[in-house]
Image 1: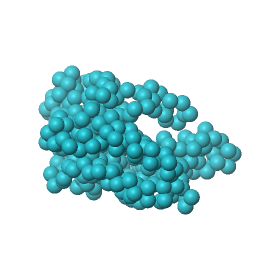
Image 2 (image 1 turned 45 degrees about the vertical axis):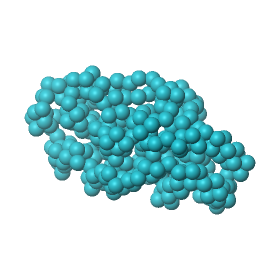
Image 3 (image 1 turned 180 degrees about the horizontal axis):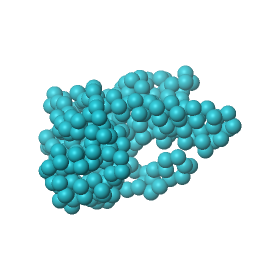
Image 4 (image 1 turned 90 degrees about the horizontal axis):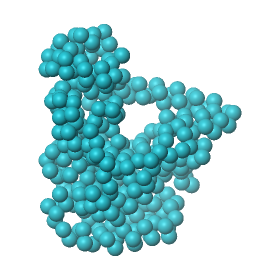
Length: 345
């Protein structure tokens, strides 16, 4: 969803070493979209193999995942399932944005406006079923467990954290918090930098942890009130939120009306903004997102040949580079695989 909670949350800078041996549930769609939009050519075009198939997401996935594994992190990748029906509005909005971006991209290409090409090409990014399957195949070959969520991947990751099956959820979005995620990790990278959206430059980043209890304590809100604040600001189920209400104004209103949610939404004229959608439909959707406990968490040995087939033979990756990375990774993997799951919390 990409909740606008940046200025509201309490966060603490950490290092990768702080996460050594921890089990982390990664929001797969979130991280794959990151790679798809940032790993691109000088003109903003996605990287492809000789057959024209997109490889940007696989380059990022293989590189970052193996680097984190080298540091002793135990990763789980959680993939989206069937989205709630009310998310259709979000898809419609995103489709319009992508359609307009595609038009602007054509104009930029016609005059060789490199900056424009780079900007608009990112906005046209689409994560296809084939790309997702390729990612799953690579992760499986790396021995990493995959969890298929019945609905939203971030909700499933949050559930796994609350169950104690994962130490934290990993995502750039704050949405995991309203799904009840106790601990969220952002900026999980060894690079210490991230490409700045729409530019050729980079910004410095550092891994950070956000604890739900600390956020609620700082804001003096309950989880239900935080969820209502999210709805006011805008979620994937009501994109844009209530016009004119940002995080600070929304927080002030929630504190003023406390648990009188019906009165609050009457005050902000919800029906005027969303005549065909009840606020409590959004609320109930968030609170009752389907999750499952039918998953197996087992980290297996790396399958070198399968990775060579997938990446080198399948997509034209450099064989020496892939094998060097795998050799380095496997040296430190044996000891971790000998430990039981209880050792990783």
